[in-house]
Length: 276
Image (tube, rainbow, N blue to C red; front, top):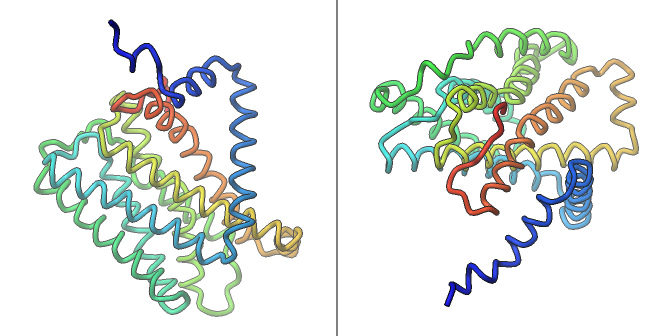
């Protein structure tokens, strides 16, 4: 007799097969509908913007802690981008400086946990586990991110009257955060592989960006377009923030799709197409 588990696939796998059999247009439509339904549920049940921010920070912190676990247990940093970790360190330091006197202690605490974990990951990759670092694949120069982000921050700067440094830092870390994952995705593309735990880390970043982007979408809905009117009145920093959120969400959305697909199909590693 055959294995019943083979003869009777789980409902989840049956759903996965049905989805795979749909056309690209149908898949895109279902994805948009699912995102809208989830956004509506968040709008109905999440009453404070603070909760979105905490959810985004918590997801980011969990992703970095997964990397700490990976380096501690497996003793290898293979598949991990040092450039992305360094960019993460930069924008977290700027964000802590900007938010230290503005937000509640919990926000700063979560970012401090993420920063401490990131610094430890960087130390391990540079010194303890440098023999396993895939340096030749991690070949995106940092200035490819830092210089354009500085230009965008200057253009979108919300005025020069007071607190100039903090306002510039705010715009700068927002734009750096939006594309900080690019070196990691570039490494994955070059190496044509995704290490376990690295895929969980990138997925956690995607979840973090979803909560953050959902927060801004709900703000737009609640203000009935008032936020867009402020952009028209010269508050270009709001446009930069919105575009940064959208860009980062779309960068990670494709990866998250293949992550979920691989999990549903029972694969241990994420299977990506030739281009990430």
